Amino acid sequence: MARYRADVWLGSNSGFQTVEINSSSINGVAEQIKSIYQVKPENIRNIRKVNAKDNSDSESFVGFGILVLFVIFALYPIIVLTILSGAGGAWMSTKLSGKSFSLICTKGNKKIYNTVLIVSLLCGGLGFYIGNNIEIQQKARPK
Image (cartoon, rainbow, N blue to C red; front, side, top):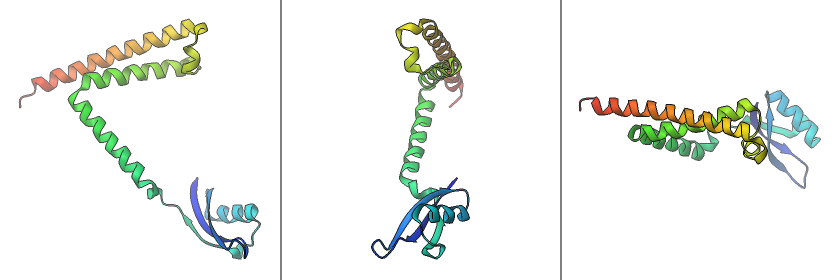
């Protein structure tokens, strides 16, 4: 669903107010505004789609974070791959067990807890192995 903004006349006490509505179409926006605010169609003006670029600050921060992760991966592939694959193994095994991680960590779930621990350690070891091979290839590359 897209997010829309519209100017709505809400009476002489409130005047025009800008409202935001989630809808799949512009017609749906007008229908929702009419039913929510009890206004006539002629009191709804300037319906427009909210641009996804309104969050440009957070998008640039995410882009910067991805750049930093790429640089860290280029410099330290063993560490990054070990951590990411270990966390991925833990995430995967908790999803397969169908229980939340906090529930798995309680005392009554030792079997599932041990399974999650073993899978995350195995995946972390695999990540270490792959990261080590990447580092060896980087060192063997002529400069």
